[in-house]
Length: 456
Picture 1 (cartoon, rainbow, N blue to C red):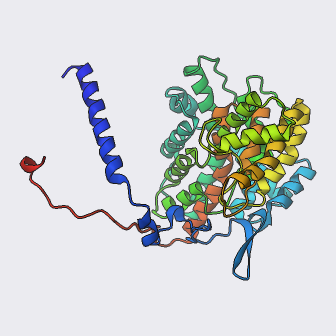
Picture 2 (spheres, rainbow, N blue to C red):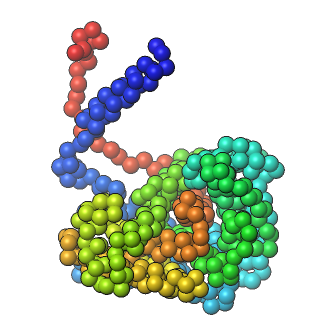
């Protein structure tokens, strides 16, 4: 068979098989109710099905009053400490907070001055990648997707570990701290390789500087000039803190627990979590927020006109504008209804960066959409709970003001969340039990075997 004929044959086969899969794979939606299946591990009222216990992160969005769910302003709690108090503490001290947050998540308490300094030195030491790793593992095989490049690099580090399968707490802790420290370099170098080999841009490889924080090093390595302002670095650091953990129920953290429960190694576990976070329904939402606002800024003539902005939001909601998905991106969350505490905190500091950058008009547009979108949604849709801006609503805007390339938005999320994944992996090992294995009920009709010659 000639190459051209082979390609045509392949296309026909894949089309036929795809159609068969769709026809055979569609399950009657009524069966989910009949068998009380919790799709997405969620009840019909939106509450997550309780599948585990954790001491690491807590998401609080409602109270139960006389048997009824009553929404309350959202709270995010790391190891029993409210995220608002944590961020206020280091921001008022004019310090970077991500390293302190990593310590809190891993060890369950805030470090004193000496412990924090020692931990920062350890992270600094672990930022150095193995000899020639960047050249041989990243630059020689550049990925078209930074998240895939990051996952491949994590798996490759298994080969450089003398005890990769040792699941003792001490060894896993060491592996996790090394990964947390090396993620900025892995992600930035993957991006630089991508832009050079797939975008024909100059290749810049800056080594991380030991005296800089992880947030500073991200900007230092990413920018050709290595220059950044203190406010830029502080706001990126804040974003890392706000993304570091979100309870055990988010998809990638649940993946971390599931994969850890099999007894596999740290590198395989974190690579699996990265695969989860790559999905646009999990880690890629702020991309869509940026695209949506670019469309709004292009189509709405008067950004200060509430009626014109609300009218265009209605068009988006009714699938008549933007990507016709019917979604106002960045508005609404599976858990929060009245407010997402991460969005509240990020908005406050984003306004300061917008002033520094001369982007007050854009910030005001974001604030207007945040105010109007819930009203538009309430008028056009039946919803069981209120909606508010989530962290993705402002994080994309912040990253855009920081001139971070959009390809790095989800990797930045990963650079933060690996801290939470690490804490949850250790927690799963400490509380070792059965492999996590949910049940699926088969609803396929039985078939009778037909000999090959008798099949139509």
